[in-house]
Length: 367
Ligand code: IPM
Ligand code: MG
Image 1 (spheres, rainbow, N blue to C red):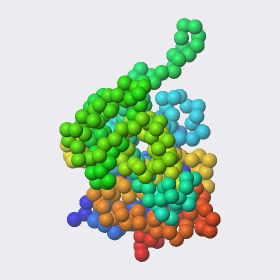
Image 2: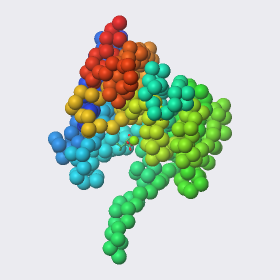
Image 3: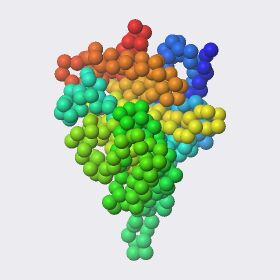
Image 4: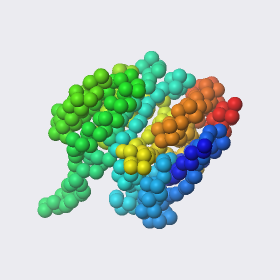
């Protein structure tokens, strides 16, 4: 029996549309070679939506995203929209979707492919074989906390305010995701906060510890301050299996972890919500990299993170482990053949553009 799945694609800005195009070719292949069938709808988000509709995220797109089985997202932002109002900037496209769909669990893995060990700026022995997962809370913390804003004080000087807020409920549900994931990995969670200066961090540590004692004592739990974690990630990243952290620390640490692997152009992510009554888990899949406006439209962008995001979608939303792994292996195989986009180029390798990289992945899949 064919399973029909509704996918909303939001390619966004910059290199988003170019890399999305390659991922959609892979999606076609999946459709032809599995019992899945897809209804793909495309829409605008971020700067592209601002140009067309005046806002980065329309109600219509939110409704379509809610009705979809999964959202495949590109990237948003660019200098063209630097002057639009703060509440209308392209980034509201992604942040708004996370909030509207309740996508509180952002899973960001950093995996070093053997053939790319040399592409990292970090010594090979430090990163070879690295496979870590950052579980980042993504609908709370300082990104959403109130009060927020910029105000002018009586003396004419100005004040900018953002507030880090976490409730025990928010902490517990993201901690649960990390513990569950860790059980399928090396069974180790490192919970990261700044409990030495922040009450929200203190509560974070307490709630994670309690939940661990009550329900997950089989998982190995440790705690680390966020600044130390940044340092440890560079010093000895292989000490980590699953890192559990809040929105802002997760944003920073995931860029750091991604760069250990050689290029932001390689890493996918999944952002998941709570299972709904109809059984669907709201989900959005996106590369960790941004819209890279400096190389947009030049056919240079690395499409692998977008293709690997699609692989994550097959696995987490559609429960298609085998075909998901096939896609991942195809990406690995083209790297083993020596094909490289500029972001991961090194001596002796063959430089290719976005389209040729996409075609090579397809050719692998068709073998
Ligand atoms: C990310 C990005 C976003 C974030 C931006 C684009 C708002 O940096 O997904 O990591 O800060 O969450
Ligand atoms: Mg980020």
